[in-house]
Structure formats: C-alpha cells, structure tokens
Length: 407
Image (tube, rainbow, N blue to C red; front, side):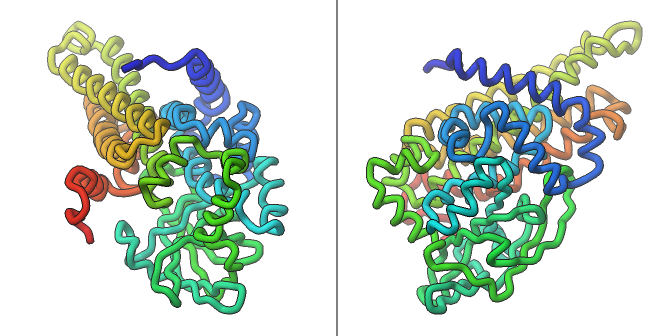
C-alpha cells in the first residue's frame, strides 16, 4: 500500500496549511470565543477559500468535493486550525451537489450564488424525536398539486441560522416513505432558532421550523436522481462527484453513499485537532522544567506522548484508508468511514485530555488553545452519527442482511 501523497496533493496540503496559518491561526482563539459566525462572515470565509480553488461552485467543487483525497486533506488541515469552519463546506456540499439537477428556474438562482461563493447550505435531517433513527421522521411533505407542503421541525442543524438552501429530510404523507427535498429559504421560508454547544463555537447551529412551506415536487431527491440518470455519460460533467461515488450508487442507497465522505472527513478533522494538541504538548514537554529538568525527561510524560502519537498515526491511516475506499468506490467504504469516524473521534478526545494533563494547571487556562481543542474534540463523536451508531453500522456491514441492530 502506498502511503505517500502525490506531488499535487502535497502542494495542495502545503498551500492550504500556509493559508490557514497566515489567515486564521492568529485570530482563532479570539474569534471562536465570540460565538457563531454571521452570514456575512461565513460568506467572507467562502470567498477567501475560493481564491485557493476550494469551494462548492461548479468549477471548484469538481476538484474539492469531487476529489475525496483532496477533501480529506482539507478536513485534516482545517481541523488542525479551526474546526468551526468545516460545516460551511461539509454540510453545505450536500445541497450544493444536487443544485445542478434542480429545475431550470431553481438553477438560475442557485448556480450564480455557488459560483460567487455566496451560497450557504445545510443538511437538515435530525429531529427532536429522530436523531439516529431517521426511519421515523415526523417532518412531513404532503403532496398538493405540483407541490409538497412541508410541516415539522429539525434540530442541531449546522449552518441552520445562516443557510439560504437546505436538503431537508421528510416523510411523504401519501407513500409513507422518507425522502429529501431541496429547499430555498427565499421561496419556502422557514424559521430558525440558535442553539449553543460546547465546541465548534464559531459554527452556527440551530433549530429549523417549517410551517406550510411549499416546495415544488421537482425538488424531491428521487426526481433529482432521475434527472441525473437521464444525463447518462454527461452526468460527470454536471455533478461534482467522484467516479467512486458513482460506483457506490450501484451497491448502496444514495443517502448511504452520500454520507461516506462526510464521515471520513470527520475522522480526519479529528486527526487535525489531535495533531494540534499533540504538538502543543510536545513543545511544552521540552520547555517546562520541574525538579530541575524538562518534564519531557519524565517516564510518564514520555508514555503519554507515545500513546498520543500512536493514536494519531492509527487514526490518520484509518481515515485515509476510508478515503481510498471511497476513491475506488468499494463496498467497504461504508464500514471504513464509520470505523474511522469512531476511532479518530475517540482518539481526539483522549489525545486532547492527555495534552491538558501534560500542561498541568496551564492546561485548564482559557487563555490556552488546549481547552478549545478539548471542546472541539468532544464534538467529533456525535454529529454525522454517534460513535455508538457507527459501531452498529460496522456490525451490520460485517454480518450482512438480517443483522441490523436498529431495524
């Protein structure tokens, strides 16, 4: 197995790392403490990343979302500096991917915003009574003529309070089946309420409330996928998805295939957080003196550094193995992305904990970045599927049909 990045990937990583170090690292602590980004600030972020060729527009998305390895590198590097920025791209990508398949009048509104990096999207599935159990969504879509009328609520949705477009999970009242609708706030207005959390402080998170929101039936995921199939060989020219993703669609449900990359991305973002905490601990162990010598000479400190480094290396390898399986469109992509998310998320919690222990009293200071690393790491074990649910996904993929623990 080749563990080396290509020269192009190394150049991308180095350019991104330098950009983050210059543009965001100096201000992260102060800005993160102020809370969620405004819509204006979020768009400013998107525009700055667009200068690096990173974005959700038709051109930039092809080399970003459409390249799983590039997306994985992005997740690790941004996780290392400011994880709060990740949902702007990760969750925004889900509605953005389907925009080119929407009706012409919808595309005329969305594509220019995507091209200008002024599109903020969200993925709205979680509900007050349907977190991991998405088979019982209570947000309903009632068919009325050529529209659906949507009623219900969502909670813990990244970008909810600043999003202009959403991919919303609903239950069709006529068929009883679950599906997704591409919704625009300007034409299907919804209300939001901000939610507060322990980590990702600058990432806007909130509730969404839908009351008699009209959505064209043409915006339903099944219709969008039919539009995709009609394109035939031209589909890859329209959708910013990888060949591997297209291959996975032949063995997985669209939603299942769609979630493999975000989960692998979460794993590598966890690696980034852990790496930042490890480097801080390593430097402190060299500099801090107790009993007349650097604490790095103490055996227990070296043991903690060993445990931290092994966890990071293992999580990184598993994360990129998951990405590699997505690149190749392998059936194991679902299992590997779930495993990577669990292992890396839990590893980040342990690594940041140990980094705080190595720093002693200073590790508890709110003036140090460690407390932010610790809070951000704790976030990684729940969104996009809790560690416990990811273990059940893994168990199901190992045992096969008939062994679902949550059916």
